Image (cartoon, rainbow, N blue to C red; front, side, top):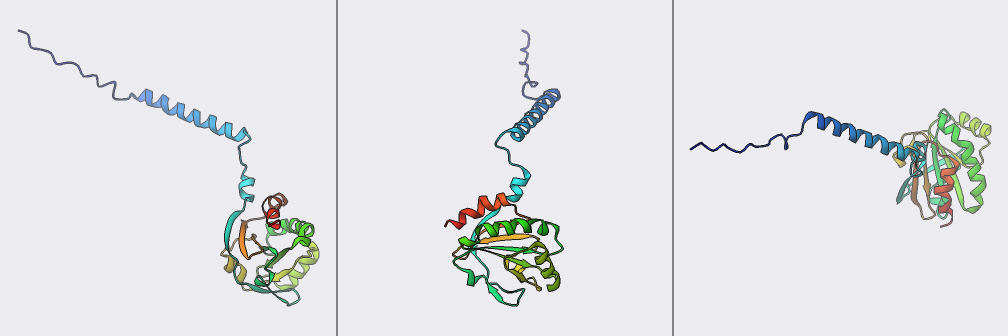
Length: 195
């Protein structure tokens, strides 16, 4: 009697071949590239500018903060309850701050009669430079001096410019780091004026 041969075990079926793995990898890369292309050309895409200009939505108490305006008058956030307040921390030497000032002035002119206030808090430049800046840019909203950086510390954001919107109840609702544009203000801030 012949001894029985043991059945062959097909190990090659359970062990992937390097060529197959390579082709699978290339296929996945091509699918990823196609998906990225589709997203970038579809209406669902979001540009980097849209992401940059979308504010952080918050619901926290505004800090207790009192600073002096250019005439030496003390202005407190608590005294502005009942109005929508945009706090903009900026500096005269900051290019993005300079770029957004005409936008802030135009928005202020459009909405100040609806219980809207801008407090532009200058982060430490000499008063004479700030006064010249305000004159040059024809700013009509209150500009406050902050030589000690109290506003930057109170809001916990040292980047300039930064902007916070406080609702009529004294809650911070929106926060931007970097310059804001008119479209963003209309999209996110204007609805708060209706509340």
